[in-house]
Amino acid sequence: MLRKRREEEVVSLMDQHLEKVGECLESMEKTIEDYLGGNIDSAKANALKTHNLEGAADGLRRRIIAEFYKGAFLPALREGLIDLTLAVDEIADRAESTCDFIMLTRPEIPEEFKEDFRKITFDSMAAFPPLREGKMNLFKDFSLSREKTIEVHGLEGKVDAEEWKMNRRVFTSELLLSQKMLLREVIWHIASISDVIEDAADVLEVLIIKKQV
Amino acid sequence: MFKFLIPLPGLYMGWGLGSNDAANVFGPQVNSEIIKYRRAVILTAIFVIIGALLEGRKCFETVGGITNLVVWTAVVSALAAALTVNLMSYLKIPVSTSQAIVGAIIGVGLLRHTRIEYTLLRKVFLCWILTPLGAVVIAYLLYKFLAFAWQRRVKNLIVFNRIVGISSIIIGCYAAYTLGANNVANTTGIFVGVVPGFSPLMATLLGGGSIALGALTYSRNVMYTVGKKITPLDPFSALIVVLAQAVTLHIYAQLHVPVSSSQAVVGAVVGVGLVKGMRMVNKKTLGNIFTGWIFTLIGSGAVAYSLGWIVRLFIIHG
Image (cartoon, rainbow over all chains, first blue to last red; front, side, top):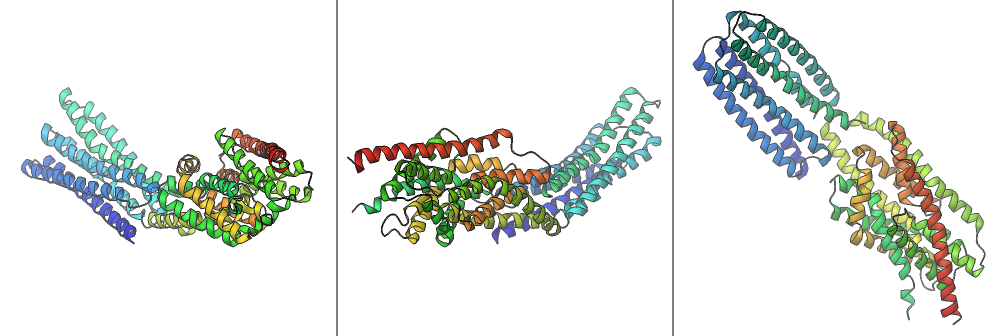
């Protein structure tokens, strides 16, 4: 009975953690949007909010792992679930570091690139909802989880292609090399959000495959 | 006056059996931390005794029926079998208490020129050959059947967690029960009908108790070494291996033939491998089993013959 309650507690904490990571991504998106719109003060406030949300996600991650070490779930499952929690947490870390990078370096983004930055930010974040659904279904229906992880892979591939095209546009433009290098770093940071989402989806997929006979 | 000391070699054998074979019952569950070692050996002890009490006497007629035994030959056989098991374990040769006790009985039978029931022996040998082969088939069928049910029932991680947790304990208890039911005859079965006043109930109780004591006091090392060999399998496959081994032992208990649980485990691992299209056991392991059969049988026979010769020369005739 106690073990069952502990497991329900872990599932609830994992859901809260995932929600917090989602909020972190939304806050990052607002930071980028404000920055592109020239609202630096608002961007700074949202970057700080992202930082706080990442801290809250970290707190939840620590509580989840502590519950695992108290004995929630069978040891055969614990390792995979801890890996999944860490992989999901990495998404919040990356959102925070993207905000930090932009607010620290304050790159000058030419007008003709702004729409591309908005689009890659939106597309990179679009990989998160299927991951969230896939992870939620881990405790409801394995088969739906698997479908969602496949969806994440497709979305991440799309962002990779966009990243490559954006870099090409940047490097064939008339900007200074130092500007080009800086913009490439910003693009990499934004696109890497979908990479870490895909990494979490990979962990989820392995967890599902290992538990099937 | 010293009548109560007569079954001691059998109890020693039971202690060794319990310390070695508890790993086949709860090894994977303990190694994957589904159940704590202490709790596992307590459950093993309880269910071994229950199995011995309820079904243990079924194999007594086989062990006691190979040849005509008297008190001193029964003691020599039990002692020779126990010494052989110890020696073989020390030499790291896979050993079966069933083969050790039968070999020892044949040894003293040859020494005393008493009639050996070859028809019964043929049945026993056939069962030994069929033990790993039967376990292959049982594991294969169990995997196929239960995997079907598993896929229909286990739809998420919560259900997986509960089913693996509960079934691990139930299957472990059943395996301990069948170990007691099938193997208790190897410990004290030889004294039933030979030692006056030594009833089958007393034999199952003392034999089961000695196996339980072995599991409780000296099974930790084997549990963590042998059990680990099964643990790398996924939880479902590991459970199938333990269950197939238990079903195999239970079937042979109904056929009144004590068999080796370790050999049944190897067969079950091969069976699971066949379903998964993987080779889980190498030729060396299979070769070791065959070597174990031959060496245990001949070794315990030779030890019993030599020991009996000494006893007859210096104690019986002297």
